[in-house]
Each structure stands twice: as C-alpha cells, then as structure tokens.
Length: 353
Image (cartoon, rainbow, N blue to C red; front, side, top):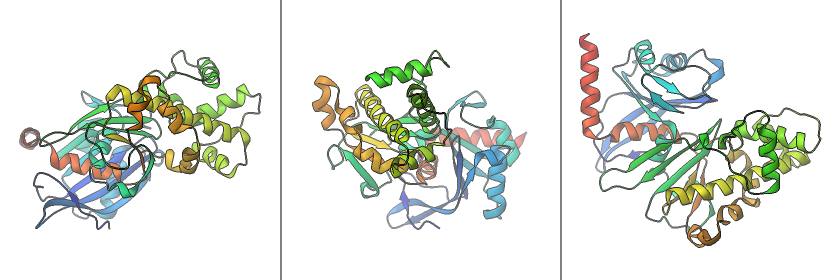
C-alpha cells in the first residue's frame, strides 16, 4: 500500500473509490482511501495493479478483475482517466484495443457514478502532487515558475494537457497534441516524412513521437538506409540503442529525441508555458540516459528569437507509475461543487428508474 497522502482542496466524501488510468497498452487500477487529519482532507492509494489491455476482452473485465481480487465490498464509484475524448456516450481513441461505452460500462459494473476524465488532464492534476525531487530536470531553471504548465507524454500514442493556475482551482485543458500534423526541420526528418507519407498522406505527431511512432520511425529509417526489415518493439529499440548493439536503433533514437525536442519547443511557444513542462508516459523512461545525451534540449531551444524565452522554461521528466491514478482521484475529489451536485442528481435519477 502506498503510504503517501495527497492533499486535496475540498473535503472528500469519505466513500470507497476505485481510480483507473487506461491507455492503449496498460490499465492501472487502484483503490483510493480518503483520509482527514489535522492538515485537512487528503487521500492515499490502497491496493494497486497494472493490467495488459490486450489480455482482456473489455475495460469492464479489467475493473471486475480488480474488484474481485482487491475489493470484497465493491466501490460504487469509479474515477476513470482514459486516453481520448468522450463524445456523447463513447470514448474516441484509435489506440484503445476495444470500444468503450460510458453507460454500458457503468451498467456492467453496477456503479452509482462513473466519472470520466481525459488521461492527460488527470496527469496534469497529478503534477501538483509530485515533488520535483521525484523528477529529472532536463533543462531550464530548477525553481518552479508561475504560469501555465504543459504536460506531455509519449505512450502508445502522444497525450498532452495544459495546467493553468487559478485562484481556487486550476483550469486544465485536455488536448490531442498527438493528432496534430508533424512538421520536419532536418533533412532526415523530411526523408522520414516522405517515407511515412507513402502509407498515409497526413503524418501525425504521434505517428513518430510515441511508442508506436518509435516503431514506425525505426522501420522508416531501415528502409531509407537500405537495411533489412527487423520488427522490434519500442522497448527493444530503446534497449538496443542503450546497449549500442544496433547502429540503426541508435540513429533512430537520436532522431526521435531531436524531433521530440523540436516539437516540444513549438508546443511551449503555442501554450506559453512559463510554468514549465513535465514529461510523462511510458516511452521516455526507457531511454532516459539517451535523452539526456541527445540533441533534445538543443532542438527545444532552437527557435530563433524565442530561444531566450525558452531558456527560462524548465523541462522535467517524471517517472511515476501511479501518476494517472493520483490525477484521476485528485480530479474526482476536487471537481467544482456544481459538478458534484449534477453527478449526484444524475445518480439519483438512475436509481429511481
């Protein structure tokens, strides 16, 4: 059990809660324990488990498995951080292995409340709970600055959110940065785009800058270099580059890191992230040492007259497996009171039917 307590601004309702962080590859599920002490309201993480999404026929099956193992008295509420957008009753994301219906999942699990938030909106909530000592400073000042904070994470796809400080609650904007069109700067990047456009006329940022994208990039580099095709996972490519056992894997990771720095610099200018940038997701921790030695920071700063502004932007890498869980629970407890009332009214109406 995680003994850390995560402070929240508004009182918790003291009821059992399950929080889940669901991406294209893994679903992380935990029981959340609300607590109060002389410092006010908080919560801690109880039982926790990570599941491979491909091993289960549905998201409901994963949560049912967790409840069967760890929750003899099933929680009536679930805070779900999930990759993608909710449109009407469905979660829209091409990286999920199954379709997700919000009402269907709620009914399958017999929940009073299913509260759904974008996964990187949840991560943006979690950043406020993480001590900077738990992160690696890649560039910029070490002290926290005031202003909007950008959270970006290459996982199966590429997620992102913007955290804007507020007087009582932060404003957090979920984005789909991974669905934006990828721009090239160097000769090799233009060559890679040309290679990828043979398969898709529009190359998205996450077609290269994600776990799936690292695989796409490696295959494109091998075709460009006339090397035999060799299918490897993102983890295998990163491992081969770290071990220096594959020259093309080394070059692929170098291109990935430089390109990621360039795109991140564009995003920093777009969102005005004076408060800094936090990098999350499952891909970067696998290549942390390679990222540090790469042209990542150099390319981040390479924005002409805006270089000076970007030197004042801190970039931190956060490697915390429960970040999405912490964020989902924080978001759930700290929602505005009118959202609580609306959710409660909806729950009462469903119970009456």
